[in-house]
Length: 348
Image 1 (tube, rainbow, N blue to C red):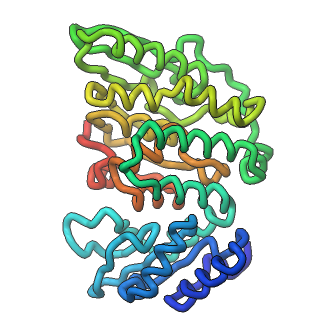
Image 2 (cartoon, rainbow, N blue to C red):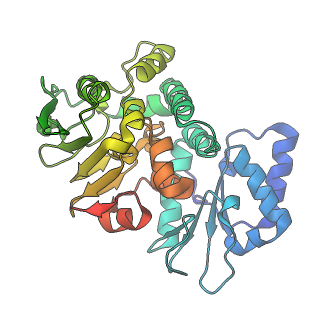
């Protein structure tokens, strides 16, 4: 990464020039993947129009909003960062941060490390919500599986050692309490890493609720110090080919199952909730979280995108802007922020 990253603040002329370059030669992956603009720039119709066109082709535009200046609508930026609350509630396209420069470095690192994954995530989050949720899950799976064959993911995989720790033979427990089906993730020694075995057992448990109309509620929690630390890193990249990976993901999709059951599902989260550990709860009717809960979307730094339904579930709860911020920054957020945004419904 060059010393010029993160890029300097750019203005409207740079946006217009970038659109011209795109129209002339379909810009290759360069530092033009990321633009940082003063939000006031986007009040001008021509500059806002240029920004929207760049967003449509997957570019990342971070707007910086200063206190006591007019606030544009959110449709001309991937997300808008500010250091001060301008109104209450804060609009969903705004993220309040402690230090803009620090956040820009985080985001620039992500875009520089995984420009293809970032580009694909931007396009997925821009798909209209009028497209059925199951179809959007299908597109997410195709994109995720494709990225498994990318150089970005290969670089991460080669630099990440395997833990070698075997998964639990009984990674999910299920009990019935009157009309409630109680499901618990049960591999605490591995922080309930979302392995293929856990996925299969969880699907079997959810199938009970799908087939039994007397089950009115499904309660999902996790044993041990962590609700779910995300996908089992040891299994990443083990698929024989990416087309098969996609077919398997959709044939055995916990996200699709939770989507069908969402009006009956409650999730109790605690500890680390990374990747799948927040993407899957996002489908639930109600999500509660303990005070020690932290939430992170780390996938872009791995050359991947949220692949357990997050482009559907998290976007539905907090909008595409904050979903983008979570993925681009790869930063953990606590329960106070999650509650304010609507990622969590209640503190446990």
